[in-house]
Length: 119
Image (tube, rainbow, N blue to C red; front, top):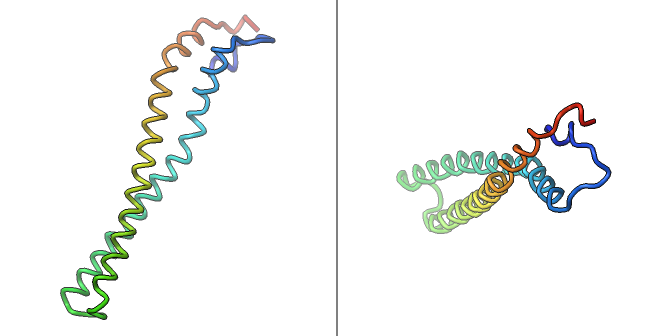
């Protein structure tokens, strides 16, 4: 990160500081986002297996037939939870991309004006 390495000043323009902090927050926000996607992926694989087993049980008439609706409702709740996590992840991803697009070009151009000999 060129700004961290080459920008030396006792004071910093407030607008520049806000932009740098917002841009730096992107890295901190990506790790939880990756965890969310891993959670979604694991949950989807688990749910696919659960639904396949439930379908197999229903088709073969195994288990307590009077509870099939209850089992389906339970699985629907799990799918709804996965959907909610996915929607939250998409919103966070979009927010990260917006922050990146808003500040990247300007901060990159600023960083390219900095020279190592300014230290």
